[in-house]
Picture 1 (cartoon, rainbow, N blue to C red):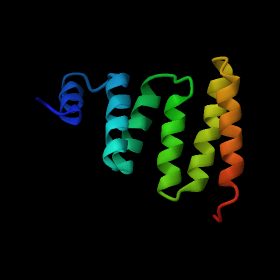
Picture 2 (cartoon, one colour):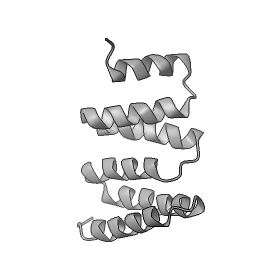
Picture 3 (cartoon, one colour):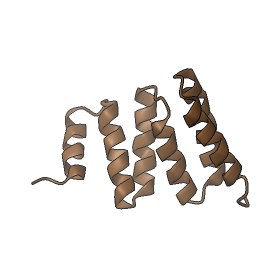
Picture 4 (cartoon, helix red, strand yellow):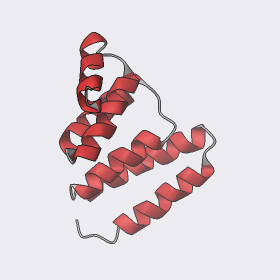
Length: 107
């Protein structure tokens, strides 16, 4: 049986503009510990599709784990706008709280 990463990479070859394939690859790369590839595919996903917030959560998590706190905050701020636009106030609040936590790290 083909592993999930190989499966999504084969789908990407067939349709490189498919946003959900990029999101799926980002998630699989994150699970595999490859934050850089996860970030790449999340950026591709966000360039192809308007997201309601979940992709911003994963992207911010990658940046936070990479020690790039300023980028994580920028992503979360954009995520707040999208969450509110799509009527997800609790997600927006989660992101606001996360930003406050990130501000505690030295930059």
